[in-house]
Image 1 (tube, rainbow, N blue to C red):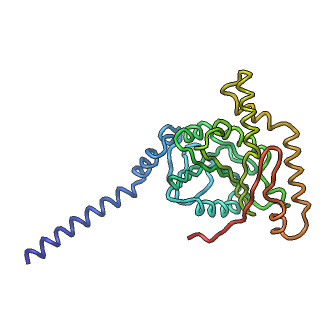
Image 2 (spheres, helix red, strand yellow):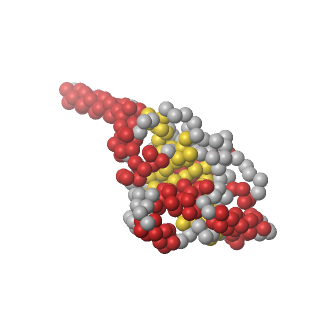
Image 3 (cartoon, rainbow, N blue to C red):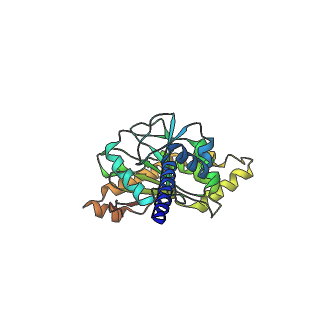
Length: 266
């Protein structure tokens, strides 16, 4: 009888310990500390960290939304769903090493969103494999109107230029729309490197990204980009035929790929 009593007491203590651990893990303050420890930029951020279960839009300035334990495919599925329900655009970074998403947009509008460049730079100092996402919301008239805006290329230039010579850094850019996902990158990285060498030779060290962005703002690049989109528009037949004949789309400045959504999330 005494032996049974001792076992019961031990079992009770173990249950209490397990309960204490579960309470500690579910404590929002403890969760916040975990992600602040993993991502230094969150510790230095002027916004408060707010843990959220499903990817969503944040138009406020008080909180930085963090979406943990969500790997690439699941997050893309939620963003795709968000394109039908959100009324403004939003931007996010995904850290593959952590399966962690962080909202990085501000001044969200229906057709644009700005990036928190200071926060992003701090994240890039710590993690060298990142995927940038933003969403285009709602239904648009015409296939061509789902393409990334040309100004998105300028963002690409500003973010990727300083790291383009380092093969250990992998930064991708994607736009999620109701039709599917666009991924875009520089069409000719060797040309980008040549521009950087040129800027350094004329004394513009530290300003390479800004000058490259200025270069790609030239009318010839923008005109070439939209002419390629018009060619995609002119393709007759089914949506799938348009995709097959249009992509990959190569312009003077960038290359675009496109894929429809696989909604089967395991």
